[in-house]
Image (cartoon, rainbow, N blue to C red; front, side, top):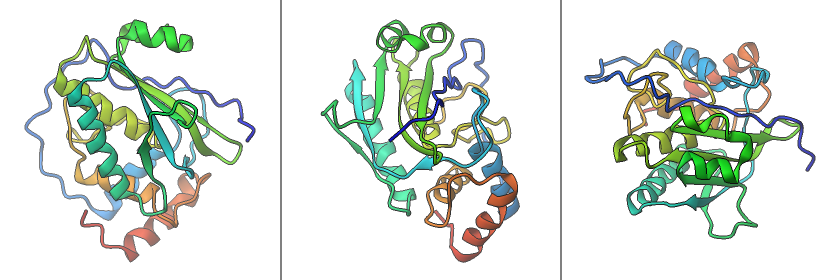
Length: 237
């Protein structure tokens, strides 16, 4: 399948200078309007690269290969995150892990920034100031088809390693933007140690990977789809 020139270097979590604590989290009622607004903020386009602000998602199975120096704790955490994401997707999308490099279409690198930069030279200019990042590819139909991500396991403690693993993998599904709106969200722009999906996180993951959600929708065309899904489904997830 021909790949459009859409190779993005997307750096979100892990800024060295941002270490504000975010607990305790306020209790926020997740209304339909808030869910729609947050979906539009997170799921249309990416922070960097100048891509169009439309929906993109995986239509094929994501097959993950772990690279670098994974610890037992992070390997177990990856299994947990994958399981949660698979439960939230209802459109046939599935994530699996593989030991076969030829079969894999997504790499999770757990190690140092220098090691990651050696394997992926295009990232060399970003690893010194970032503890985590992701990079994805899509085809001419705006379907995600491959990529890789990294978590620095030497400059972060285990709590933040798990946070970065969850954030970068989730954003690699097409939820590519950060926000400062909800402190407990995995997409929170400030540096946090959140290791669970918030209620609104689960809803926007569910919405993107719902059978009725299509790729290529912009802010205007995605809204009626979101309202239809929300009105027809019980999102007590």
